[in-house]
Amino acid sequence: MRVAAIGDYGLYLHLCPRVDLVEHLAPRQSTALRTTNGTTRLPIQHLARLPRSGRWASDLPRYGSIMAEARIKLDHCVIAVSDWDRSTAFYRDVLGAEVVGHPDGRVAYRFGDQQLNVHGPGLEVGTLVACPPVAPGGSDLCFVWPGTAEEMLAHLRRHQVKLEEGPVARSGGRGRGVSVYFRDPDGSLLELITYQ
Image (cartoon, rainbow, N blue to C red; front, top):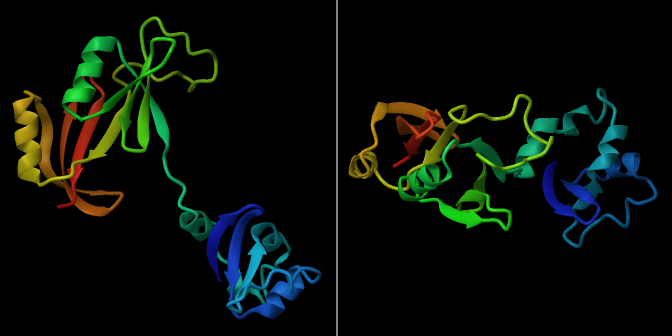
């Protein structure tokens, strides 16, 4: 059993060749759910009907594995700054952020398809914020460096960035890598990790 896709009717599982399982969970739909290659698509909500022990227990995937195969990704998070211009220059020049402006005057720092939304002086963000709200200097973030550790260090030296620690071996989202630590202008701890 494996997650196949997120379709119009939710997250589907491929079941092959457990037709008996499908007929147990969705007897009126089992024929309609079969695909041309002989596998069967089953909406994930039918898993609630699956017994936790006995005949089908070994076919029930763990919830975590379903979510992992669904490939949920981080879209954005929030940092706070005390000086818009100083922080924008740092994140643009040192970390290579694309600075995205908004009509209300605030900015976001975009890195590919992920971004940091920025809260700062004069910005009214309302009540839909962390509790307590993120404060300048209160973040701890790691970014992936696309080159070697030597290139990473040379880049930081060019921008006169003072290192807190590193290079040191660390584990990140892709496994083992080499990291350096430094701070943004407000004191938030930043890490660059390279997997090369």
